[in-house]
Image 1 (tube, rainbow, N blue to C red):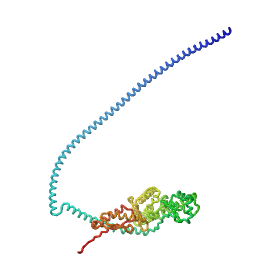
Image 2 (cartoon, one colour):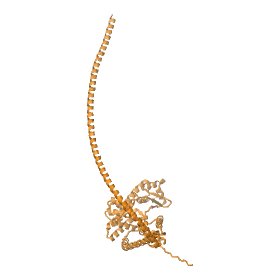
Image 3 (cartoon, helix red, strand yellow):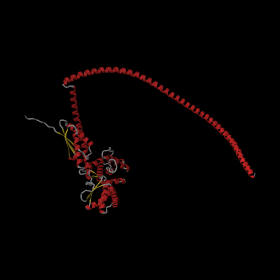
Image 4 (tube, rainbow, N blue to C red):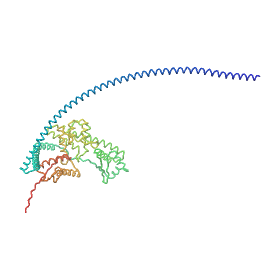
Length: 516
């Protein structure tokens, strides 16, 4: 019975627990349903408020859009009114122009009618004149015995001969007058300048050969597998020519300063005897400093010798570099000093500015110190550097004009031109290789023979004179004078040459007789 009571108690507890569970679940359900209802009401309220706000925003946007449309419509109407006004104004102007054109057209028609009448009258008179001219020409042809074409040809021939004669006479008169006035003065000035110019004419050629004490030294310079030669060429930037010539090494380079540095380096290596890459580099730096010092000293000495002051140190260095530059075998620094002397002497004879002439003469070829390293002619480079280092306009123009590339703007520029030509053209100043010499003479003869009436031509006196034999039946004595001037002008425009070239024309008249 006790067991049964225990079971009953347990069953009662279980039933109570189950009943409590269901009652709690029902209670929670009621609470949840109440919360959901409250949330639904809140959500409905939020949606309602959002719809009200959206409706208000919509009405506000519609009002703003209407205002904007109204504003744009007003502006468009205003613009249309302005355009209509402009169109009406243009239409009015076009109407006025059309009226004016109509009036002008009427006037032109009237003038055309008047002109037509005048043209008809003129044509009638012209026909009458042509008839009279024709009859007169027939009378003249009958009287003279020449046709119209024959008479025209005869008159033109006579006129050509007369004009050739007059031109030849005028040319001779002006040549003689100019020669009489200028020859004596020019000869005196140039002779005096050359006489007083005490420049050294022994132009120093650039030496590219280094003598060796023995052939064993040549092998040491070459080094193991050519190591030393490659090092020298790489550092100095020159090419070493080592051939079968005993006890000699030739240095080849277009840059004369670089070639001089290489020469000094080789001489120091030969004297030192220790030849290896590290020593080569060390002696190269030493030789480079020595050559730069020599360049500076040479430039300073040239400035002092020329008597020129206040020269920029960079220009002094460029002058020193000219010591290693030659042109047709003529040392450019010696040539520049010579031009400076001659220009100064001629300026003194003419009473011109001697200092300016000497300065321009010294600096006229300064660009040749740079034309191996930079692009451009030595004239353009010289002008550029003269401007860079604040040389005055007279000096710059003299540099620019000394080869005729610009118009001389001062007496100094003209004197430098003349002094440069004198220095380059004097005997022994320059040398020329055989191939260029022959080519220049052939060009001179070809220019002469290109003219009609030339039979043969000969370049003589090393190209300083050309003698031309003309055909006597094609070239008259008067025409020879004109042809000589034309040939000389073509030579001036076609060739580059120092000094002057004399053009001589020869015409031979022959008379034949036959004895039977």
